Length: 394
Ligand code: FES
Ligand SMILES: [Fe+2]
Image (cartoon, rainbow, N blue to C red):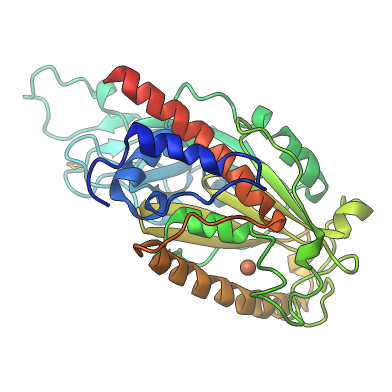
């Protein structure tokens, strides 16, 4: 797109995506391809919303830490020696080297470049050969700290220190998934992130599209969760998340060739929850796919207008992983899920190609795409308020 995409006309046109689904149009293609719009989204979404960085279990013990990047911002999540969970920038406050990579256990972070050293909470504790430097106050050069909150065992960070807490704006989602008790669910650290060549919203929408289930995924690995049983509980645009349910043809359905759960069922699930798949979304960064025996979590971390990194993890009922046949049973689910995910990834990649086209539409929705309507309302609520704020400030 040419520079200057963000005009009053363009921003007003977005409202066509936030009306009732029966009348709504899809978002303009530029929202998925434009570098200018991506910069706008950083301001509208990423520097004010709660962003999932990983699981709390990845930093369980004092001294544990892990690193990640969201919108290109290098981030450390650490557990201090007194047991407090902290999140901070990984950017050295001397000359911007990253003070940590990967994950591990440490007493602090020593920048490899000139050996400034930081405590696990980001406090600058050592800076060699700085005694001749005028007015140098170590206290002013700690790693910038971020707000941190744990929800259902997921670590969320917020670049905005004044952001309202997350959980009070997620009550409907929390209630619907309470039976999973995800804070105590177990699962391995995901494989290294996949780097994917499409806009983060293409990914988020695909994971919440009830319409394609009976079409793209038609066949014995998916037919037990038909599009005709899609449900979209009401959410308000100001909520921090929204739900999608999809009824299944039999209880305890799961993604493998038997179409039934092969791993232990999460103990707290109601009969209702066992008769559906639940999709729980905390945009812009976390999307959960929940079956009776397994939860798949997607952590979306954009690194550009047309690319993202994706962490894909699995969670199981406590103790499930200790069973001697666990790996074999899991393999059944992973193989089937992999088949379905490959179909989705193919579509995501080609949707991004289509969105770059001069013939990309503002299309219309089926009732089975109710989650796209909720997502649009969530987005446009934030786009609108940010655009107004930016105009007032300029
Ligand atoms: S950049 Fe980190 S100590 Fe110099
Ligand atoms: Fe899919």
